[in-house]
Image 1: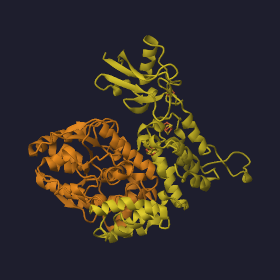
Image 2: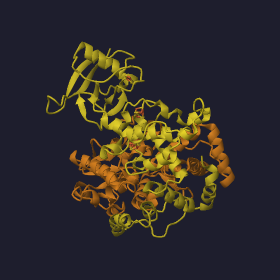
Image 3: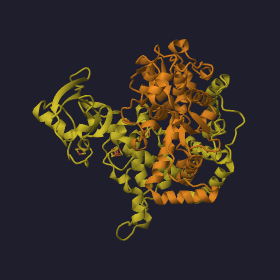
Length: 318
Length: 288
Ligand code: SF4
Ligand code: SF4
Ligand code: FES
């Protein structure tokens, strides 16, 4: 059996000034999960290590933490896969305050979820006699997203949240998707409008941390892309994100390549004077270095082929 | 056997990041790697077109793949975002034969091309590592960059989601560091090397976007880096072109990985167009 050093983040903000790491030597047994290992360390070596757990079966969502810098679900991760040069470093989830050791304050996560009205809002003027039925096809649209176990792993590693605590975050956007795509919900348009505001669906950077860390099939980034598709299709276009997409479509559909002189003003809006002024400094800096995109935008060769593909836009739309 | 690729330039290397295309061409020429520029390939869509219409984006990319297949060449990407989008499209089509048939039917109807699924999608970095080889690269170095401490900035699409990544350990990669070492420079480990540069939201939330790139640059600087090495022209734009708006005291040169290799091959900074960067080479970089 291999011996592994568990380097565990320890901190009690009520009694300590700063966090520290404490090492535990642990004999690795085959087939154990990270949660099994922590439980062993806790029962045999140090009962004061604090972490959340309950089901041990990847269903309750309690045991998310960081291993070697990335969020994982402890009960769904093999310990052996984490060993790096004989060491495994365990930290609490990111983007939230530590309460004690590996236990973080999840309130920002719950608070964010509440913002998107995470419950069904059916058309109550038209109540069915029994239940609101869905076809298999309708359900499949939300099948993946309903597997979310609210573990917070995505929230922990999200890049956009790191710089903006008001950003809705991946799990919340996925939750919004769950109702936007639910055939029984009546507030689709309103939800799409709300979520297109600042700190909403267009503020996600596509870093894909969420989908990479998510232990379920929710895969938030994929859902975010679907929300954007729904917003584009529903004509919720009054924001920089949607205008950016429209501009992208226009320039690529016309010339086969992006027109970098056209897209920025198209995205901020041609009548948005402060927005346009905001683009000037970088434009001037690039001009002075001769780095500005060519003023005459050239199409790719055989651009007609691409134009022809784009001419069928509606036909190919989901 | 000499190496030859279909070069997919992407839009930025033809626009606001032309120094990337120039330095790729000179470096490959010097190393004896033959490139055939895909002048008829269209924008990969950058994950943006697909948010409007996923199938249109897939048809356009399938056309790009078909063009390379017709030329009998694998694709070299020089933008991590393009390669990520290409790889995602390729995986998506391979996993869903029914969908691939639909995409191909649309492609045939509109353009006469057909994507067979045989082309390999690579990017400059993995070509250096796997096809060209670092031993050979080391031999080609005439000016080891032993005074330079360089922080690698991977770019999200190189690593995430893992299913589209070609890195051996996408959660703790060392591929860029190995290239940095091969040209004699010292790789610097810093906490933000796998983070997002923020570019995708520069038009939606400039403050958040530039906080991300600023944090990344500061993190590299605090760890003692002389420069940040990028393999995506979008990371480069957000960290270089916007740097004066983030914090003019950072003064951190941002260098395309092709330029770093070029310097070690004895190519001048002028030829590598490093003077077109907003942050001009300073310190150890300027002294090379
Ligand atoms: S892809 Fe978007 S939501 Fe997901 S972690 Fe990155 S910024 Fe956050
Ligand atoms: S989306 Fe995935 S990572 Fe995020 S809370 Fe739900 S299950 Fe956890
Ligand atoms: S303990 Fe319930 S999900 Fe891990």
